[in-house]
Image (cartoon, rainbow, N blue to C red; front, side, top):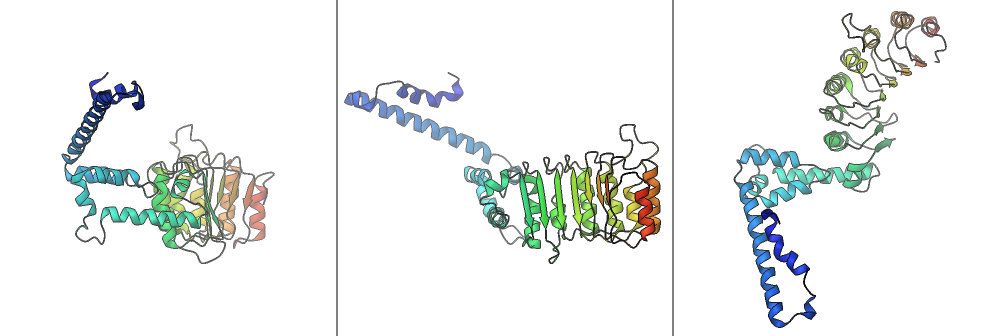
Length: 341
């Protein structure tokens, strides 16, 4: 047997012997001695490993602890903290300018995650960590809850649907939720929908940056309805959306962007774009721009782009409630045969 597993040898020998009731007194004493030897070997091995952890610089230990911190599954970080004498004190110490220790902060984040899960109809942190769908319609979530959800985004790899709909109730600030989208975040999500959540231009820019860092790689449906996204936000977001070839449904209804934002969304690809890129948003079937601030000029530009072959898969286009005239809106739909309103 490998030397690394030598502490197991006494136990392996014991397991292969007769049951205790068949042993003599001397054999029992011998077996007890073997058990004590095994216990000492285990203790020595544990102390050796702990010593190796303690030998790491504090900065390295704190980095390891930080990587292990998971508000939905804090056990690994707590176990590491318990195993390392050198880490235990710094993790429980309140640093300069801080109001709580790293360990206390992790405990509070775990409690906040559990409370959020209950609001979302999920009974445990484990169930939330493994959830494929998180949906809250007619939501009672607060801006703090959305910020908590944003912090949890990196530890929700199984999630496929994220839908937060406040249904015209008070619109909370969703900026921190969007900012939680880091590198390759939410790798399985195909539906990402925020309704009556204030994303704003800053949030739209943050979402664009996240998409460019590989977040939401499988995204098929994006809804940002009544999200307070103006021209600056859509101009920032549009290029990232146009680099999402799988996107099939885009709902931007109820946002205050106008012709400038629309032009950025349907802009032709650069002349030097590689052939695989071709026309952007090539799979987009549903586009909702209702109750935005698009004028007759914006409609004319959109009609021109449709006649030029933009959005080749488009089947449904919503332009209700915009400032443009009925004639201008009709011209857009006439630019593509079979386009539904």
